[in-house]
Image (cartoon, rainbow, N blue to C red):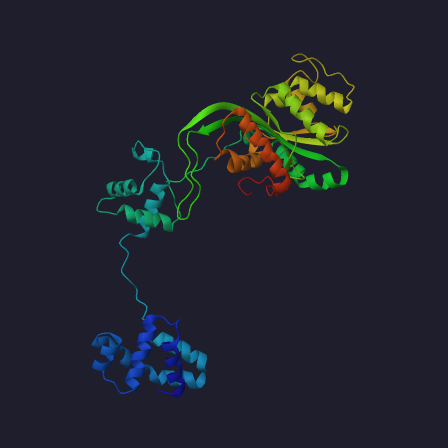
Amino acid sequence: MTEKQLALLEEFVAARSTPSGLQVRCRIILLARQGHNNEAIEAIVGLGHDAVGTWRRRWRDNWPRLINIECGEGVPALKKAIVELLSDIKRSGRRPRITQTQQADLASKACEDPQDSGRPISQWSSDELAHEMSRIRQAFTISGRWVRELLARMDIRPHHHQYWLFSKDKTKDPMFEVKVDAICTAYAEAIELYCRDGVHTICVDEMTGIQALQRIAPDLPVRRHDVACLEYEYQRHGTTGLFGNLHVATGQIWAPLLRDTRGELDMLENINNVISQGGEDATYRFVMDNLNTHCSETLVKMIATMIGFEGDLGLKGRKGILQSTASRREFLSDPSHRIRFIFTPRHCSWLNQIEIWFGTLRRKLLRRMSFTSIEHLEDRILAFIEYYNSTLARPYKWTYQGTLLAA
């Protein structure tokens, strides 16, 4: 053993980062250098007689190669060679009991509807998959635990699901992409147009059926090593609704309106409140869904008056702008108007940013708080909106550009 080899072995034994197996094998070589026989070494390191002899023979047989590496390649290469020499030789391992074909069959079956296999269930469990694979493949047995392990490796989760909503306009409306692009463009331009020209981009929608629930016992607060406890049983005190108006450029909620109804007169009042807050001479772009109250006769008449429209509006159900829902929506969507409405495609209300804020309201206020009455609920909602506008409001970073499933 050379001095460099001795120094490296002592370094491996002393270092805390050295794996325990390598550390023991280095000690075996150092103890052999000191003149100890195999019986004495095995008593010190705790290995069997054959193991001690194996590592001593491996060092003896490979020592000429270590000398060549030390002289020709230097200390780093020597250090790497010693680690490889005193490490376990790679083995091929036991042959797999489950072949690649069988794994592929399992993955295919996990992605199928269980009813296709004659089972009256809606989702697979690991034990049911194991039983089904044993049934369709004779002499093939697999446990539910192995099914879970294999599906986890393949990132297949048949017990998980999430909801999605397919827009019929995607296939039926040739203007679908144009509508989506108009909304995304409105969001992208909102801050610049507001700062430069004072244009207000407002996302409008109704949150209905907000329940005033009062739990029959007070909550137990969070404690160390324990979570908060909420009473399961509750009393109902009725419901209310909220007209939410999100100012896209600032992220604030404008002129919230609480009503237990959402008729066209309620919608008219809400739009009028928003316009009154931002200035009657300003420019507005309202983003909303296709609810019939969003393009009512009264709303068209009010907007026509505000923008100074002097043409003939016609008669509802008979002629002109007021004739049908489509004609009224076309008038409200006219890009030349100072007050313009941008309607989302059907089943695409997720394009409306107010839906994101509604989720914040549910998460931070409605989900856990107890309300003693409708008045208490409405007071708390208004207080939260005031708090949100002053501390949390900021524009959402809208990244969706209209490409399906690529937001």
